[in-house]
Length: 176
Image (cartoon, rainbow, N blue to C red; front, side, top):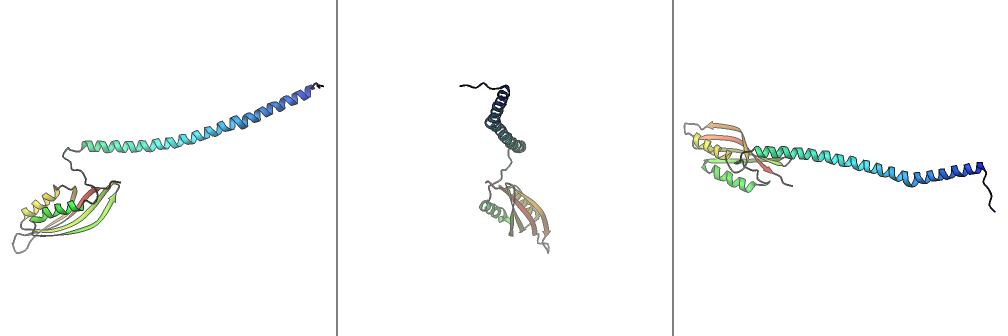
């Protein structure tokens, strides 16, 4: 036997079915879609941050490439870090014309990928021209460096000797 549903029962049953369909839709369709959208938004923010960081790196790289392109063809390149053997040989060769010399190695200073090695140098030469030649040889040597704090003092009693004191800062690259 089948019982006929009254209008009130039909409305209640219809509302219940619509409510169940709505809950099933919300639970199994809408919630996963919203979760996935939130995940994609988060991934999008992460990717945008990576794009901004890479754009900054690309701009820095282009700036360095432009700087390197502007360098003359005969520009010296920086040797790799701990170039001390080559440095000592060069200093010994250049300073062989000096009557005597003294080297004082200070600490090493790092700035990004550049290592700066400071050397205090004092030497005695037989004449001003000889001292000038030694300083010129130092500045045109194989190792890239800067000469600063130059002090030249004439020797006493008219013997022509010249005492020179200066700071050399050698530059090397730190490759990681």
